[in-house]
Image (cartoon, rainbow, N blue to C red; front, side, top):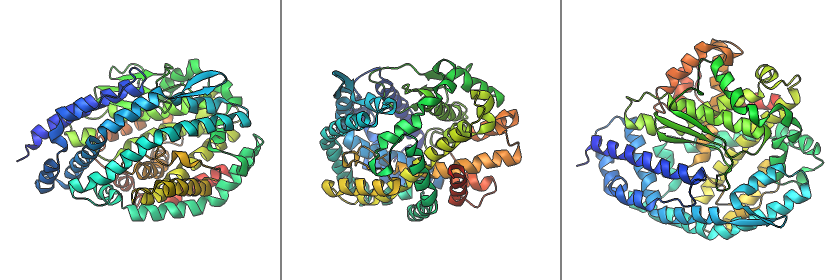
Amino acid sequence: MLDIAVFERDAETFCRAIERERYLHYAGFQATLDLEPLFTDFEYLFHPDAYGELLEAELEPRPKRYLLDFVATGYLRSKTRALDERLAAAEAAARVVWDERELSYRMVPIFLANEPEAHRRHALDALYQAATARLNPLHEERHRTVLEALGGIGSSSYVALYDELRDLHYADLVEAGERFLAATDTAYFGALEELLGTIELAPADALPCDLAWLFRARPLDAYFPAKTMRFTLYRTLRGLGLDIEQATNVAVDVEPRPLKAPRAFCARLDVPRDVRVVLQPTGGRLDYRALFHQAGHAEHYANVDRTLAFPARWLGDRSVSEGYGLLFESLLAEPSWARPALDLAHPTDYRRLALFERLYELRRQATALLYERALYAGDDYEALAQSYAELFTRTLGVEHAPEAFLADVAPGLGAALSLRAGVFEPQLRQYLQREYDEEWFRVPRVGRFLRDLWREGQKYPVDELARFMGYAGLDFRLVAEELRAGVA
């Protein structure tokens, strides 16, 4: 018989240990990702017997579902742990030769975002895709291993498993995502053509790396100086009565390292006692955007009530924290914040670019939902690669290479979680504007309200939080209307 109290104690110990291992690797402090000893030490947590006993345990439905998700995810990762180690080591060791010098594979996206010449971006991107292709045998082996392991916990479908465990209402979400794509087609493709025109490219000739350069917005660098980035964040948070600079349980790491992952992240080393923001500098507004986004995660995790049970502190709906990250990120597209904070006298064009970027990301996530249905239905990798390239090219309007068909996928139906967060964030923001002030980011009472939400961890899913704020649930129409107007 599973002792739930002991199980949760050991599960939290495992979470702290594996989060530290991932932090050390992806923050660039160690080249290897050593998962094997951790899964060996805590093997019983992810045994199918533990899953079966949890299914039969008399627990409240929501924490029970969170614990089942933890075990199922851990079980699948225990089957891929050796491959995950090999992939991490291969990524860290991979090099691309460019301008007669070797670039770390993980640094290439940063070079792409900073390369002003389209023909050079495309040449470097081709090298990057070739390096990705060399990693694909490991990705494919990992994907097959996951599909084969599902039966060990009584499941035959990856999508159905996570749909149930994460209460995603996946079919309804896919349908809503399709409606969102249709509702924003005209606005998106019109803005895409116009904005690419500002860098002398037509959509038919463009790649995702060209959008990376566009979003990098080098002409605006004077408004986003690296030396004042953290000060701008700290001053903004103080307007809400939050002082992350003095918080003893939050650290901010923006130091460049060759092995550091290009994607910023928030490491939850011990919720809420030790939370770290990790950012590999790209430059300009992209660094500000990443820092503000990760600060939303950090404030959330650092303010979780430490007396909460393990499932509410560590598990739950990850869309919740992603929503808080997007809330803080949204400030950069808010003229009343940007004028004084960035000294942007006329932020209209910049706001349009930022909102187009948000629209692009939401369309990517809605597209990934469509792709995931095929991805987890089989292992015909040639067909999947072609489907990935065709689908993302059609919905995003720039040519996508097939090589990224596995590397560009978040596990656990991560696209669904991100899409839910992207729909929730404008509802949360409009609630703050309605209940407090249009310039909600200057109101300390908002900080107190947010702290009250943050104390609950991820106990309540985003659709329930939306209902708490007076909405019927997650409303795709609201975000579609906001973004259509913003990019017009």
